[in-house]
Image (tube, rainbow, N blue to C red; front, side, top):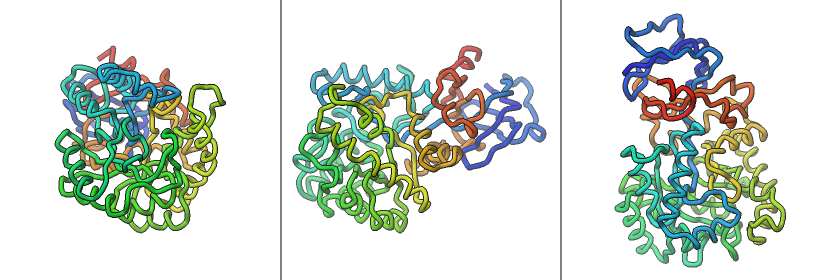
Length: 404
């Protein structure tokens, strides 16, 4: 099947805008993308009139937890559910994510190995959802952040290596390590480093042997520094970044995945909303410092990829584009924010040969927006403006999907 989208505004994921543009999709991939005046329409193609619409690559969220649904107390929710209930909940969240124009996610911590079952179901067409790059269980120290929830405890270099190998055998395409305390785990300080440098280095070394990248949860600067020295590819959150840590990001070309929405949605709540008091206090104490770290990273030109931490308290799947609004509010241009969720995100995950830009040969992951998000970034968050979502050349959501 050939689909020709003509007279549309094209934001191609490289920083370029073409208007009016024509994009031709042949089977699963993009065949042509260019100015309408120089792009010929193939005979027999199904035509889509793109006037008034913007076409951009399917969005990529580099930090989600599909096993959580934004409950006030996500730890308690998982503890009270059966694994089957968690899987069904994750499946629903995956569908909502896809409908929002997010065609790829990196799930960096799930209950047991349920994420791999969900990925298989989506890939086999049993349930709708985005392309999933899953970590399975995160890896933490004994007594560490998210232990016995979505993280496996380890102690010592040899056990770290063994657990990394187990995750890869189970299906992990990325390894997640916990390099500092966190907000949601009682008794852990986000500023305190967790796992030793040797343990983190062992995780990275073992992952690299299998061609896997490593993402490190780190709020505090000491945890960031340990993780970067160990060789990780991204720091998740990077909430309390100092000057030395920023220099290491730059020197080692490590990505920041800021997850601004997580602390924002948690910290905006009042006591009694259901979020445990300990978590609420930590979030409120760090929110402004988090914004400052992001501004610093942007001003220094550090590598940034979009991640929401969707699933954390009141941070809902399907509302992923709220992160782009926050990025713009804290200094990015709309184009810069879009690039963090397209080409930059694809490069971090290691799938930029497949998705992230609208170029010939890439998978036809596309989102169609009514209006111009370069003028109003919030259009990407308005589901009424999402008129079509295409994954691998097939319309999967929006009014356009019903007409093709």
